[in-house]
Length: 507
Image 1 (cartoon, rainbow, N blue to C red):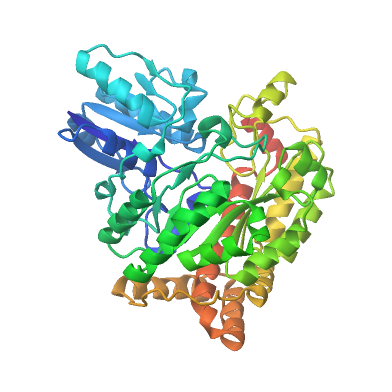
Image 2: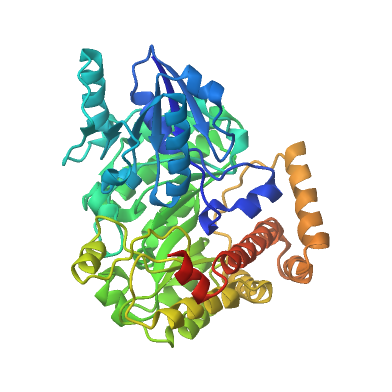
């Protein structure tokens, strides 16, 4: 059996980092972990090939080879998914689809032959059993959650890691919190389920075998969802592994702001190699936090917590949202001021969206406030807001202009570097510089330091770092690239959503 695993193209959003990728010489940010895991669940005697449309196109030759196309996608990839469906239908190859896009709305994709929904560790074996008997059903689903201790090592061999900026693995699924706009608990439950420590070490060793990697993302919904097990099992093992292997990479992950309450946990995470962390800050407005169920962000000084995390040695990407029912037009200036004061290097701002399956989606549906289209970009929403829609749209665009303007990004980074401190003891990552790395540095210096019309802020950042702490110059180069990425993202949003009237006409 020939199985072609296909990952759709990401649109030009902040998370796709397309502009930064062009500077780095890479083609995509992370390999498609879900499909690599599915590939490892298939019978060992089957032939498998993975096509990531962010890396290479899907060709007619690929489709002629395949007995089935296995398609996995997130909501943001719907446009590419529909193009893939059309291409497969023209070639006459059957599609088996799974992933978060289809879990709650598979009925919107009649062109797909078979759906394998929920977690593949449970539902894919059901499909395989029926396939062996020639009795396939149109839908395979389960209300149960998988024990991911049984999840196999992803098939890292199906991708060329040189095509990607970073590598990826997953330790846990699920989150104990109940934010009403987040679909994690609906998809994966509130009880964090974890892999064994030995399996994580196996996966890390497999990543080392791939070649030189700069960063590995722990793609967890909330890495600190089970702090006890994290402290007692995973982190001690990672610290010991790092001392033995001296890997070329550090770790990134997603977690919650209450990390700042636990000094011991912070120290252990840093010793294990975690540096870049994504935290959902959402808003400085406590009424909106309470109304959305974001209780872990309440009754705390979020700015103080952010600065504490920076001083400890973490660098943050922060998620922010406008468009809550309790937001007033003052929220745009409040968000801009908070973001600048925080010094968060990578702020990511979105209009509030209601993903299918969430409590927010059900409430919006009940109140008759759902729009027909799903929201693909940061500047779109599938919710009819309480605030005047034109004021919300224009306020959001002004907020993006404000925080992503290179001048303001430069100021925010100075705040960050004035606060940030390398953790002690600092983990030394092997500093071998390859020819490819050198080419990337030259490319970045030319594009940002010569060609970019905002190049003055790139040089101001590097000169400031050289004067105040030259050890941060490599981070300055990286964040110079991110200033460019964020500004280009805001320009793209302005082009695609130029005015409120344009947005209305596209709905």
